[in-house]
Length: 431
Ligand code: SPQ
Image (cartoon, rainbow, N blue to C red; front, side, top):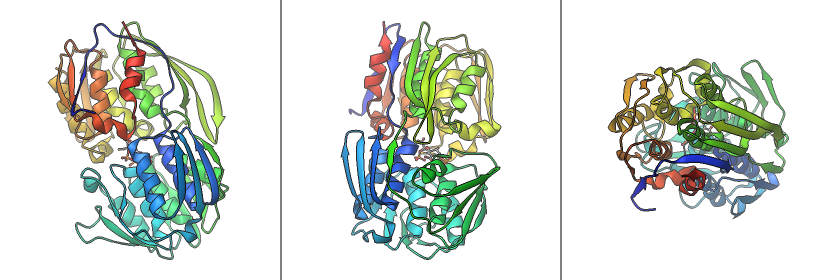
């Protein structure tokens, strides 16, 4: 993809049906658990985005045989006890999920490995994961700046811990649980606010006994996983961009098929509803331990809302595009309790405010969120992606409602989670 992409449509309307690519969080976990298990795992609907391909490459370096034909993946593993010591560094690329969950997994393995990441990931905090893993006896060291990649992980014998989560993070919870799978004793993790639960669900799907009581999850160490067949639903975080587009652009009506509806991820639907958007959920059903269904979104008159508290982990990755939506809603939308946005691929609070202001939006930033005043007509301009896929896609969706074209600098990062984003955008836009 060229270094700049222009989004310019004359009076667009979004109509039709769309099946967005597979869920990123679930795709990562399917390859991870399939590689820990001994035997064969098949994955259908795998996300072929760059982040998930980084996860596959890591396991290949550990001696796991992984074949991929488009979105069909087959994992054949000798089991975690028989992984090979890699001859080169394990590269997590841009993927925080790969890095953090793998730190947990590698800590209790029998191999020594070095893990690195790209320029953005190397600035994201790993201490939130290395701290609890250290309490379990993990041997993770750094030659450079402590607690940032690159890190060296020497597999060790781990002890179970009872861990009270200081941040609402599915990555921290998952890293501790996946280390706990190899530890001696019962590991427990207690969340203050519930985050996405794909790891827990998938551990059960691979045969593990996971218990839950309130906001605490218990996992007995030493359980063997068995390879299985996983079907990945569409990623609601990817659909979110077109859901917002359909809600904002007059005359639009889009149905998203087979999109994931796990309750820990559907905060966006709650917010759209509270902003006055017409939503229809059709044929909801289960799939490999996850819910999915069709979601129809129609353009609506929008009103401002407040987004905070327990909702935040249920829509954390959707906040950039929801901020764009709020520029078109009547009143002041307040986003709070979202300080985690500051440690994503970029500081998403500053990035969203800086870029949308270039189009005329009125946004005040706070330590933990934003206050957005609407409705404001947006003009065109040149927006930066900051190498952050979610900022790049937000910029593209903004281009559907601006009076002049939007140019996006460095749009290639969008392939991190949504390789065919622009093709899907064009397929929905009718004039
Ligand atoms: O994997 P990465 O880079 O951290 O991806 C992001 C994203 O926007 O795609 C965040 F930057 O999603 C995270 C999400 O924010 C994926 C994730 C998971 O799969 O467990 C959990 C969330 O992060 P966290 O830190 O809140 O646990």
